[in-house]
Length: 315
Ligand SMILES: [Zn+2]
Image (tube, rainbow, N blue to C red; front, side):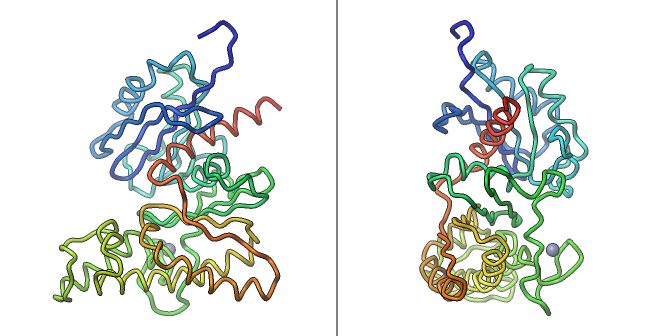
């Protein structure tokens, strides 16, 4: 590196329930220089740090910061994971930033994955830097975060628990949060798989292979009656949730992301038509879109969080 040249690279880590990805990201363009994927199962904090050091070491002199996106929430300083609700055991009450900084001496932040996705969409999603942008992630769970006039919500220590908004006031599946009918229990990838597997156990005719998962359900989509039925149920729940979000946040852009959002491609125009009714009522138009960041959303989001923190530190 040239002497005094600004550091231009960020490390973005998407630490998921089943696998994690480490990407070295160009801070200004979002170009990913190197992407490493590893299985999360059996990991410990020292092993995580070892893997990160191995990937980041060649870029060390150009690294301005490191971001770690997790399926849980951090303390308000974005230093420690408070909880992942048991989904990634080694992260419970884990001082991630301190451990990484001790190994690499690069400023590090840890935060919720939906918050990371929201700032990543704003920075690298190609939506033209809208005044207000909301991201709903449909993956293992459902996350919700929003970026309004340069600020990211909800705060890091609140998590992004919008997935527990009620989508069915009565009935619906029990949710691990203690109530029934949450959006997460109807529209997450986990819910899609659970609904399909329940039908398969009762010999519902289908091309899906038991036990199935959200990826297979989304891939088969309209070509399979059961897959279509499960996706249809998720969309019913989503409609109500999106209507609520529209009136609460008036987003200029509303992004659906996460692995289970892929099954929504064929239904996007009908969801948009449905939205048009709300827009006729209040005159506010929002763009309902699917994320373009694909499976890089977590890595780019974690990098974008770092970028935002570094910029606010310079002010
Ligand atoms: Zn819930």
